[in-house]
Amino acid sequence: MELNSESTSYQAGDIVYVFYRNPHVQNVANIQEAAVVNNPENPGELALFLYETYYPLTNEVAVYASAEEAEQAYEQYID
Image (cartoon, rainbow, N blue to C red):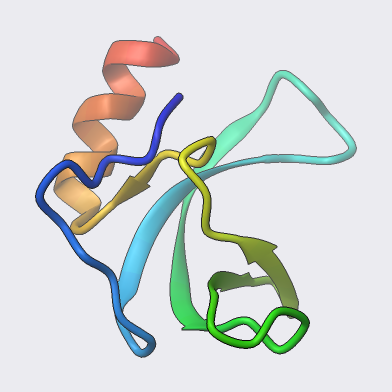
């Protein structure tokens, strides 16, 4: 899945929605709220902050601006 940001530019402080796979049960995914933050490990880059962990904000992550967008994509890709 790709970053859903053709016309969206994220900034630190934005709240977004991502698909998050349960690390203990690989076939279970949920929509989770995440914060866009300045990456403490790579100054000048943004990261997603989710479950007390920083994840790089790359084009390999499906990111949605609203829960509704994420739910529609979830139904399309997961169901």
